[in-house]
Amino acid sequence: MSTAPSLVDALALATAVVDDLVVATARDTHEAIARRAHGVVRRGVGPAALPAEVLHRGIAATVYGAVGLSFRGASRGLARLAEREVGPALESGPRGRFVNAAVNGLIGDELRRDRPRLAIEMAVRRDGRDVPLTRDGVAEAFPGASGRIVVFLHGLCENEDYWRRHRDRLGSTYGESLAARGWTPVFLRASSAVVAEGTGPAPWTRLVSDVVTLGTPHLGSWFAVGADHASRTFARAPEVAAFGRIIDRQAPGIHDLIEGLAEDVPPLPHARYRLVSATLTRSARHPVARAVGDLLVTPRSAVGRDRRGSELFPGAEVLHLGRTGHFGLLNHPEVHSALARWLA
Image (cartoon, rainbow, N blue to C red; front, side, top):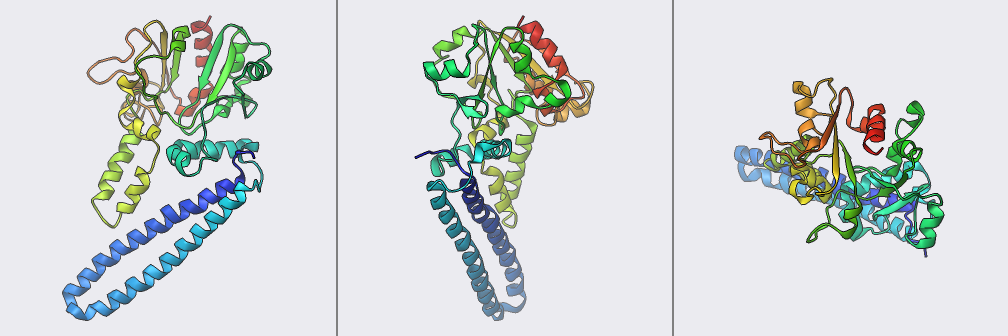
């Protein structure tokens, strides 16, 4: 039986999320507000307020319980249908792949534990499909492979299709440009930016000659830090604490964005590093650029240089692109030119 996720799998997840997040958040917020309101009334009228409070709590519990039960039942029913291979494949088109990648980036570990059919495992991709990592599978997928391989790994909540962004406007992609220069592009797909633990670099890393990063949050993302602060602030007030729990429900790859990877990914001593940053403003020194960078990553984080001047990648070549957002780095004329120079 195939384990490929279907649209019904996605619907089962959606109904479960409505129960777990929307209904539960509404219930907890309602209870917190009601508790405070009833407390004020009790201080004013005393024990006479108790019957109304008990009645209100009973009605609320019944309503929220019934709504939650219906969503949980629907989710279980849809999950059983999905196991019977009912419904179209979720990843048969780019929209489905987009949704699955985004969900995996947000709650990948949860999916791996509770809904493995939807969990994305790292794989080499070709034409929207996993490439079997066997001699025959690789030979079929890359019949004209050369000895020069360039590996593309997308960002969080993305997939390999993102590397085709703006192709209609620019007429090419990084992979196509490098293929014309004798390189063999290989596209990976992964669910999140989780770093594998180990005692040192894997043996294959000695074959790496160059590492190019595009807006990579080496020192974290201001956006993730702001979300973390918001969740802590919400937690202090019962009336909005449930919203803080929504923010906290994320994969380790997102939590990594709070402090960055830093020492978790030491540079390969023999490889040449090229670090590309972007800012919405023309200059990287503009106050807006220093605050929000490319809207997700600041220039300092993208090049791994903290406020004290310490560098994660000493000697790396740095390229800054002004008036460019984070996703603009996926296909940019100046990066095309830089890649041609760096990988000549």
